[in-house]
Length: 222
Image (cartoon, rainbow, N blue to C red):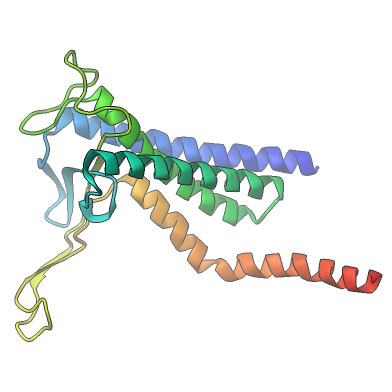
């Protein structure tokens, strides 16, 4: 029964990961091969916009130490993704809470999705500046292995206004909510983290219930 449960949860986790990866990469490849950098498609007025942008893989499009920094960042993220994948397998083997496994599967899938961009997109695409990129261009890609850029496209500027003049620091400046442009992989990571926060008491309670009986048994034996 335990073996069947482990196989069931492993299949469930793999389905989640592969489904998210497939949709994430499908959307990114479509964007890359149908839009030029900065091009927009207004899906729902000015509230939901497909806005093609790329980033170096850090939050808010920041850079870290040029090409060498990008390589270090990519390697670090690969190690982190490997650690998350190992932890998901550990949870499955230990028959942890199903929802916890699902949360971690979402985080793993999202992190892996963005790693694929960094690892391979520079090799299989040319630049998207002022032109639509080609998949596997004859002249080669725009960057080496692990030096690719992450493709983002979802933009929800639901509220556009200005801070009041009396507001500290940002008084009078433009205010946009929600400003960041993100992708499906980012959404997957966010969803997994939010679920971890919302249900942390459930996960912690189950862990406590498992640990306490073991502690009592050890004290009784001694």
